[in-house]
Image (cartoon, rainbow, N blue to C red; front, top):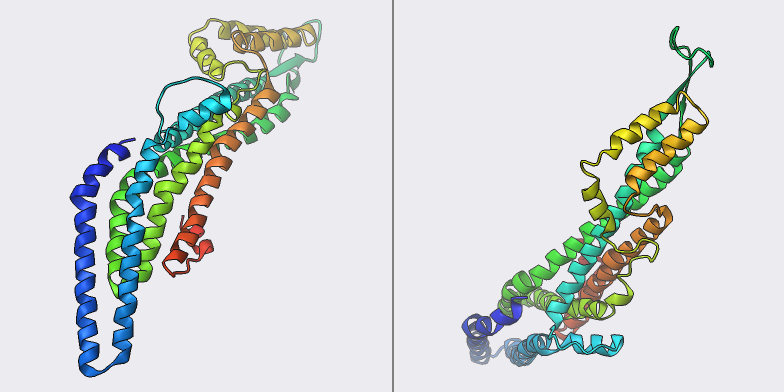
Length: 354
């Protein structure tokens, strides 16, 4: 991520001057209030001014940890922990922000592969369940003297699998969209939270009557700058145990390649022709039609409907549940960080906002 490269320039050119300006403005206000309190003999103004001095030094001390946290996240190599877990010897340097981004992108790619596998099977069973036949009433003469007979569904039993796969297809769509949403939130971490919310919270906290809002913005920025990427990077360290394609499927993108190879293949016409024969030969023709349609779709890949359902559930866990836990952890940490500033944050309302 560009965050590590941009932060030092941002710290020197924007954040430090803002800290100095806000501190001087707050100090001037405190000094004026203290002088006014002594001049008119108002003890409440003097007590308020002394309390503001404590709050000012406390804020400066807490703000000094921000560059340390960001630099720690940029210098800490998550790949070292991954090597220990997987017993590997990779020398690639992956900081916490890069590890978090890698996990979200890997989860999105994993969900896309699961989506392709489910959609491929769903198309097959939709074609099979929609296939119909017509049996003439005159079995020996056929339909030479008019279409009198019975229409029937050749493979209506596949409708149950089609309905089940439709549910898992919706789950994989949700998984893919959620992974992309978390990638968007992670991108905001290096833009809005660090370069906007943090200075804005710092500025509001320097104003006595805007301290509550400033504390909340400051705590929210710190949580998403450090806690949220930290949890996602932990998930990336163990991602080899999470982003596993079911062994029955093989490679995750096999169905994507099969769909590309299927375009323009001449077997579609042959499959539909054999399916039409099922109306003339109800017994053997039906079996030939089923075999022809499956041979057309499952030429390069295997028919594994229950394995792709398992694939969809794994994608839901990797792309929805784990990143959502990281988001909840970041929001929960906002509450505890705000307590350091003496403010109470309603977590339920914050969750509704997010």
